[in-house]
Length: 128
Image (cartoon, rainbow, N blue to C red; front, side):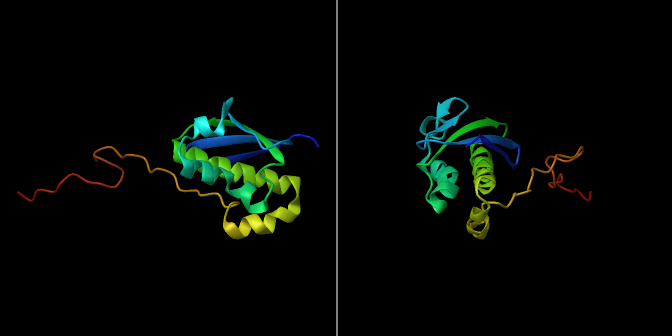
């Protein structure tokens, strides 16, 4: 099997995934999953597509992660892994789509406008 690559984005985070057959190791920016994402919840988020299909021990995942915070990075990585699994076998698409792992969450942070303290917040209005 050749290397399967896919990309996932969430907020400002970009995850590039390279999927190969192996023994289930996940390397993120040359670090192990547990050291890059110390939180058990974020590790769970990353492993969701692999656990859903029951193939967590079949693939080695090499990841380049860039931008955003840790939550956005974890969700971008989940999307990228799900897309790579669909590239590997198109039959996986229905199971992953039902769980929502193939949906790109397009919500981005709205920019701050000049003359306002935040994106939507306005300074207090004084009548007199």
